[in-house]
Length: 284
Image 1 (cartoon, one colour):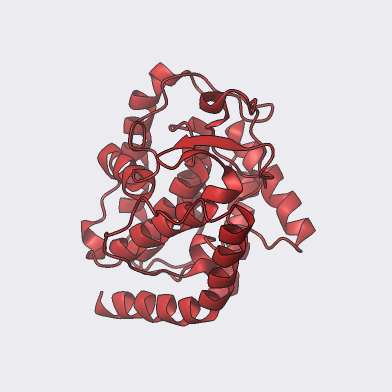
Image 2 (spheres, rainbow, N blue to C red; image 1 turned 90 degrees about the horizontal axis):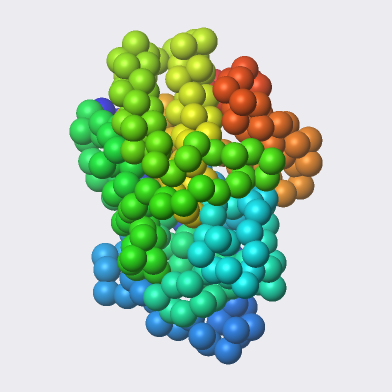
C-alpha cells in the first residue's frame, strides 16, 4: 500500500514539472485573449494540489472526444459533457464568473480536476469505496467553485449525446446506485494488485462505459469518469494510464470513439480491447 502511494506521488511530481511550463503559457494566452476576464479564480484560497496531466488529461487534451448536442443561446442545454473539442464561439456555460466560453473556463476546470485527483491519493486505497456519494463528491469538489447551483447534483432533464439518448433523468439515482453496487462486486472479484486478466479488463471497461452510458450529470461526465478511473487504478495498485488518445493519434481516437459508441449500446468488448492496450503500455 505504501509503495502505491509513493508511486502515484512521484508520478504526479514528475509530470507536473514537465507540464507546468505549458500550462502557464496557456493560462497567460487565455488571459490575454479574453482581456483578463478570468483572473478571479472561483477556487482562490483553497488548498492547491497538483496531479499528472498525463493520466487526468487535464492539460493539452482536456476536452476529450465526443460531441454533445446543444444550442449556444440556451446555456442550460449546452451544459452537457463533452468528448469533443469546442471552440470559444460555440460552447458557453453560465458560471460563477458569468456566461463564459468553454475555452475560457477550461483552465479552471483543469485545476478542479487536478485538485481532486491529488486529494484522492491522500486517501488509503482501501478507503476508496465506489458509492453514489463519492461520485457526486468528485463532481462537486472539482466544479463547485464554478457551478455552485448544480455541481454534485444529478441532471434534472433529459439530454442527447450525439445520436445516443441516455436514460431519463429521473432514472439516474437508481441506475447510479445499481452501477456502484455492480462495480463494487466486480472489484471484490478482482482484488488488489490484480494480474492483467479478462475479469480485470471487463471491470475497468464496465466502470468507464456504463458510467458514460448513464451520463448522470448535466456536464463534465467525461471528467468525472476519468477521476473515477484514476481512483480505481490507484485502489487496485495499478499504474496510471493514458485515458484519452493524443490528438495526433487519429486511429486511436477513432477506435476509442467507436468503443464508447458500442458501450452506449451495452457492448463492452471494444472498450475491453482499449483497456488491454492501455495497460499493456504500462505493465511490463
